[in-house]
Image 1 (cartoon, protein in one colour):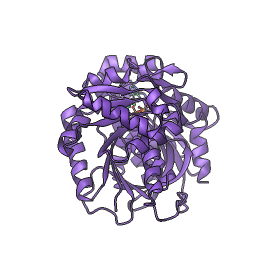
Image 2 (cartoon, protein in one colour; image 1 turned 90 degrees about the horizontal axis):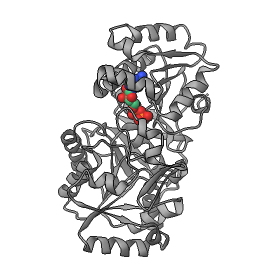
Image 3 (cartoon, helix red, strand yellow; image 1 turned 90 degrees about the vertical axis):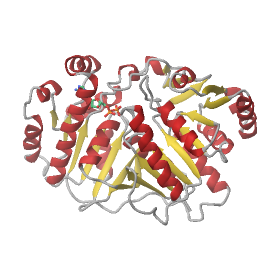
Image 4 (spheres, helix red, strand yellow; image 1 turned 30 degrees about the vertical axis):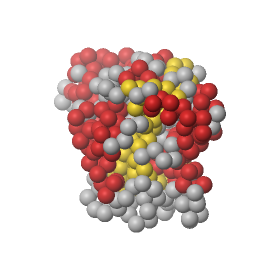
Length: 420
Ligand code: ADP
């Protein structure tokens, strides 16, 4: 019985949610794209990972609807549209358009929008999203290469992406618990509001919101609400098996890191690694000029990986990214670098790498597609939001897909040490 069918708009985000559901005791499978075959018999939740965050809205809608159709065919009782905890979107979407399309297809007239992930410092108060102690619009997200977030008001951001009316379940209602939240949602619905941003500043809030949304056909959120929904299933006695700590079989083989995220956290992680370990930088402008940077990176790695793990990165500071984008265009720059890093990853795996850390949501999407991975089993958590996973395929590969802003400064070495 599939309790929860999830549609994630990027690959690291999908892993983040799957990790959360596993922590909540749900047996969870993550698929890369919409599966061809029938659903697995033993999953409480399936997370379909799309790479739909920054593609044209029409395509994101089409892919999301295909995922919805498969999940409903598979018997999913509740649908969860997962986006980033920093509400990453462009002026055109895709959070609003995809939510609209899912609501239309499901014939539902009310849903929530709650990217909060307090454990990672993403909290929502009076509709404003905070990253740590600053507003979203003052955080590193203002310089994101593809989805710069310059407004912290989630109601305003979402309202700009949908013709439906957007409202707010404010903190006072959330503090009142599930019944108060439900009452507030009913009042908003009566006012003609179809999507409600929900304040949340703690895991207790997530649990209360999850409980209030127990019977909501469609929930849209970051990964945080997943914890609340898993608790619902547990409270109803629907997770019969013991909550098994996620474990993976032992993987032998060299480790490596590929990084395409340009977030402040990843810049710090790359700098920390490069202080004492081998690191190769891929220059975006060099790539654009036709220099064989991928081949050079692989030749460099070939001499080293048997001895120690290596890092290949395009990660750069905001001013550098802006300069590259000014020359190449935002989309072209992103694609060029993603393509190069995915070829690096495929080359590393061909050389024998079996433990691969990838930094960056879009980057992870490109890498996972290049490796032709179809599904991921969720393993132990490295840092909040980032587990090790086991990728299916000819040779089993351990993959850690890290969303840009996640992880401590020593994340890369810590992740590889966990599998040593
Ligand atoms: P995050 O998880 O931090 O959002 P993503 O991988 O989703 O990271 O997005 C980063 C984007 O920036 C990717 O499209 C990547 O190809 C691009 N990128 C990486 N390095 C550079 C660079 N040096 N110049 C321009 N764009 C870059």
